[in-house]
Length: 110
Image (cartoon, rainbow, N blue to C red; front, top):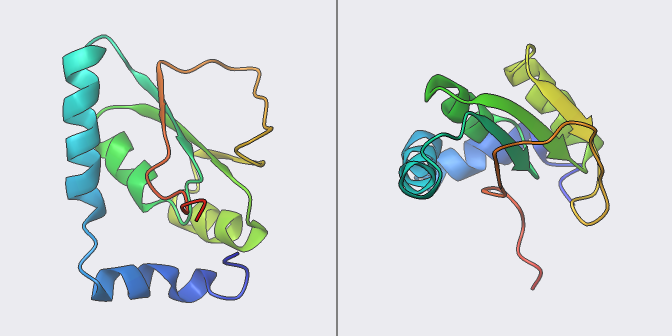
């Protein structure tokens, strides 16, 4: 879906006022209410990695899953030390288990 626009993806959302850090803080607040012991987080459809960066800054051990190769390349540039797995959110399988997962940047099915 984003193969041709991965380089413009973050700029587009920044122009629209998207605040990845604030969104991550809201997700973390919910996680802390329901799973206060959670330490690892899998970001499904992680896009260019801006939520991943925020989750890591907020204390989580993070990894991502992304379908788009262009987004994976952008994410690895953004977060070179984070494991990013190529995969479809509907079918991926990882050997590792995570305390929580989220899909903050997943496109809607509509």
